[in-house]
Image (cartoon, rainbow, N blue to C red; front, top):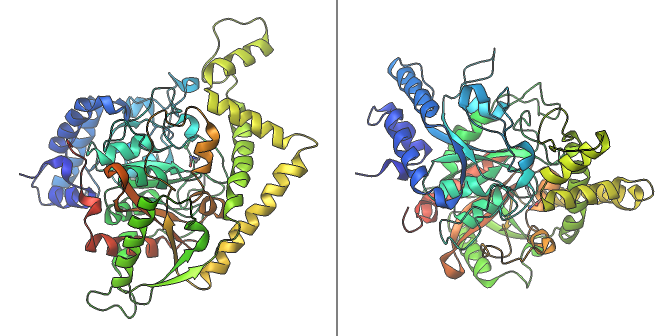
Length: 507
Ligand code: GLN
């Protein structure tokens, strides 16, 4: 018997529809696996009783013939999405002590759409929420070591990081604790952990998924997306979680998209064995620097050769401002974070110091106690670059360069349909290997930051294995709202390879 844990979203959906398994059975088995592998640190919280109740409801809806394709399929959410505490029994912490004990009175739009639906709105997808997943504090980080609730371990090698900030999401999917998870990506936090943990993840175009109920880090960059085993699974999830939301002023006003259908649509000129015929894949010279680790380069090149066999043409392109993406991002993201995090003052919600002399002292102590070191560092950088006298030199300059980075992409997309390269310069590093040097982690973001700054969709697809048997992801970047071409390219690769189906030993 194939274990229920090994099944992906599409597989479970088919098995549930055929009545081969019930959602209660799947949910029960996965909750047991989550308990068994608590040592990974992927989950911050579960509520077994409420999860089983949701599964029972989904089974009833299936029996009544009123269930959608995702009904009864389990999911877990990065703990940056708020979840209605009364409904789910789950916390909403953003990986921070600042929000320990906070009970959200509502669900994030993404959570509602994948689950019960929005209050007063159409029914949701009816997925079962298993729990909340560990992440870097306020999504700031690349290794999940910045969580106030401890690190997450990479299921492929427990001495290594799973990537971040959606490290819990990536590790949980890789360890078969859940078939799919939500994540958020501000500068790479879906793509990089997907790459480090050997799962598939997509960050859609900025504005495709609602940010309502996503605890804010850098509002002009934050975007939600799914992490799952395959492109097919990601397409199903993205269809359910995306779409216009009037409660998010930056939500794109577009008709709902059925990414699974779009993904399977044949390309003009496609032939048997050559589904990607006519697809032009651009390789930016800047994404293949001499410093790129040889194992990562090898796996990425092999995946590109496979895409060529599937009909795609590789073309050389250039993103000349790639290196500047690091200083630009690490000015803009902290600037926005310092403003967003101003709300945690110990008054309205969140941690409040037990003892203080006066109001100012209460603010200071509450923030000093509630925030971890990386968050404090970013608040300081952010307030500095926004302050009078430095604004023009840093923040304004960064905004100008951000536009130039976006323009570089548009020049590329005149010559290609998809841009490809590595997700990260190396495979997952060891826990505490960076010895608290934040700059090392910032520099490793070089290949994910440009698409984030431009607001473009980006994806990580398992492309093979590198040093120490660790997974390597291939990054695909598309033009605005062209998620379908990314998913189609990834799906074609996954039809020809089996990297996405392999599980770490012991899972
Ligand atoms: N690693 C980047 C950072 O630390 C990106 C994080 C993210 O995408 N949330 O900011």
